[in-house]
Length: 180
Image (cartoon, rainbow, N blue to C red; front, side, top):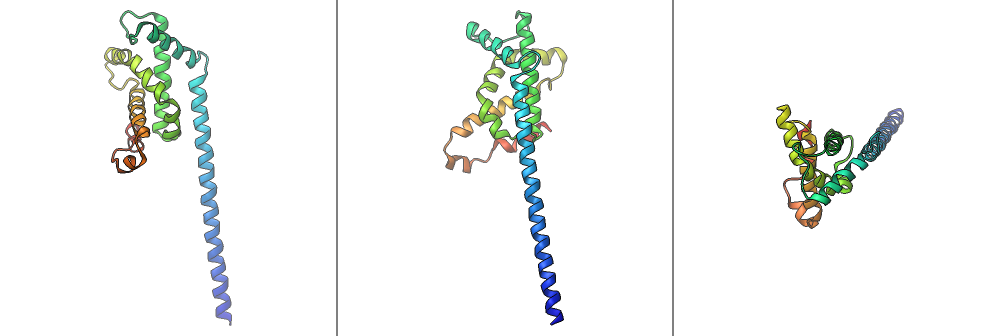
């Protein structure tokens, strides 16, 4: 009788430990999700506001593109455009770093921003190449360029049927570690 009581107590203690571990795991996952959401909203806030509004300088670049159809380059463009190009490049480079480090989930971010990232990178490609050549630094705003690659790939990825995506070997979330 005593042996069965200790077996019952041991079983109850084991079950309580297992339940405690599961509850702790659920709490950790919930906290991580809340943290990711906080990081996501902070990044959105960064991309949409600031001392010199990133949205305003993006608008300057888009108006230039719509009016002239030419990308921004270091040669011959106005100082206002070059400042706008620097602010947008820095903002998206920071966003690329934050996404690559896993602080913000890649999917929701690219769902929201992929057309804008690709278009801005297209407009700023000569500017970025010129700055990289001037500085002799091929990694100058490399996070922005990689983010643009992911965004263009994400566009293709999300428009394919689900059965095709299941067979696809290359997946965008496997490429995120390249910036670390």
